[in-house]
Figure 1 (cartoon, rainbow, N blue to C red):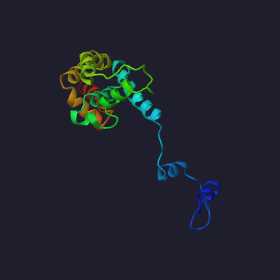
Figure 2: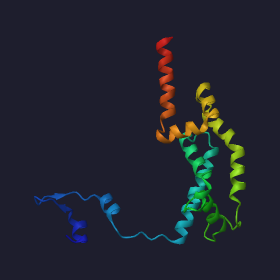
Figure 3: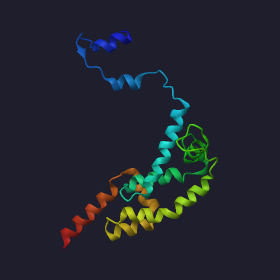
Figure 4: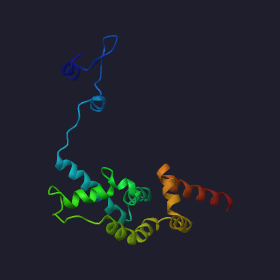
Length: 171
C-alpha cells in the first residue's frame, strides 16, 4: 500500500477490515531523517541550560534536582559529548543564534563552583516539608538518596509513608 493510501484510508487487516491509523507508529517508524536548523539546535541547548534554574526552586522535586545535578557535575570525560552541560554552556554563550547576547566563552568550572556553593541551601529548601529524619538522611548521604530516586522517583515518599505506618501501628 502506498503512503498516501495509507494516510487516507487507514490500514486494512488481513481480513480486509479497516483499522485505525496510529499516527505515533507512523512518526516513530518513519525512516526519514528529521532536519534541525542550527537555530533549533542552539534553542535546545538553551532549553537544557534553563533546567538548571529549577535547582533554586523549592518546589522542584528532589528527584529532578538530583537528575540536574548529575548532568551538571558529570564525569569530565562526558563534557565533550553532545548536549553535555559544558557543550550547552559553550553553544549558548558563543553562538550568534543564542537567546543570550554574545558573552564569549564561559569557564564551566566557575559555573559549577557557583552552583556548588548554593546547592546545600537549595536542597534544604526542597526538603523542609519532609520529617527531620528524612532531612538528615538526604543531607548526610545525598549520593545514596539520588541513586534511590533515580531508580524510583517515588522512593522517598514511599519511605516516609512506610515510616508513618510503622509508627502508627506500634504507638
